[in-house]
Length: 249
Image (tube, rainbow, N blue to C red; front, top):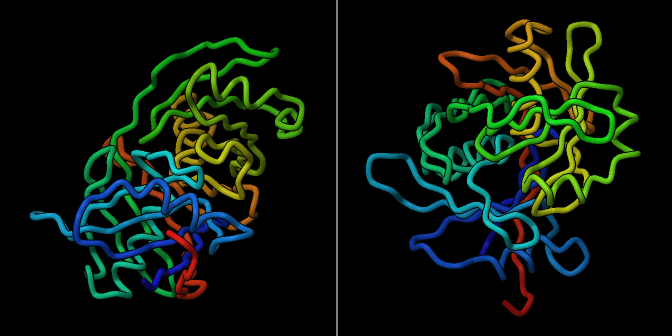
């Protein structure tokens, strides 16, 4: 089997074409292992689905299933275009619902995410006020100095709210975000739904305008906007390489 490896905002994904739905959790753990596999934040399997360009099955590096991934959506869209599974404009099905994507010039991909929901307001934890926002997957978000991220018991917050944990700061009309992701149980270079959740929170509190520049930990610039209660995320996607994995699967 040949796998494509793609990166979006510093998130890297192994992407494959499949023809039937299977439990690929063990495969995801093997392939995503950074010492004995290809190494990635997640595995995405693209399957045919009537009425859509494709549907996906998304696995975190620990083998758990995730309904949505903003950066993964952009990476999957470029892989689908490169492999003639879809055109420049696409509509595909995720665990969180149908989303659309468009391949633009120079490897830029824009994806429109599912409708977001504010699950809880005014959560008090560790001297900060948090909001729990579903941006396809749940994120616990707070606005503050990014240095607070290093002092938080992130694993405890992640487990207590069964959510990713994102801290963001506002500077020069842009947002900077750090995210601790469930399914990886560590900070990642970027998280598309985490950036979306922070953008939603800041936008609804009228602290930023749309569109807005967002920088994840990787430093790669991403543009987020909101149309009809749906966030659009636009940024570069890179194909890193194709790989064959010869390990025991």
